[in-house]
Length: 240
Image (cartoon, rainbow, N blue to C red):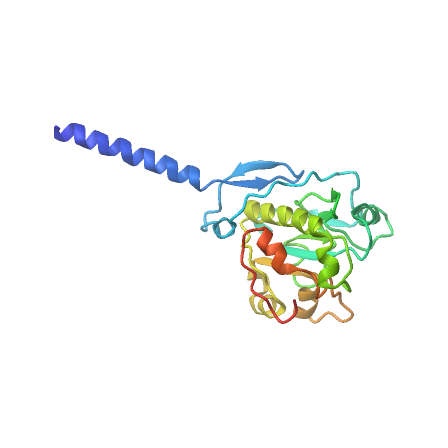
């Protein structure tokens, strides 16, 4: 084969390899309204994409209720935390409806239970979810229907909502390049505004020493099951 032909062939193969590599880096992400779209990973290496081993179908989240307590809008690049809560009530509709009440003292982006999912705020708006650092300004907040006092067995009776929440969190991690890694209070206190990952309302309370703070979602919450649903390893900490 002539040198010119060889060079051209090598060029074509190299170009095809680059195209395949670029396509492979794309992942499924979630829009504010709960829909999915293709989105490239971040320029910093897409740490969230690298450890997310499952593509989980998103639940159909109703926008029937809109939370009244909310802050200003923010840029996607500011989002670095996912905060898990428990509603301390019996249904997702009840919690979402309460967030829509002017008397409510807080809000979250998503509320799930075994049967339903509600989006009460778009990701672009700051919620009134948890005190401590920039947990609201930089965080996405999800409420699991249940009680902080529940045992592991009681939570496991609601595996459907654990799976539903896992799908929401997994897709958030993909969209906003958040690693599927649990952050305990010590890590949050140490890393401060550089902390990226998943945590709970209780861990924030401990990290920032908030008097009379929250304990949700409780010691019985099956964090290992949630992480397993997302295809990620969960490293237990002294709290969970």
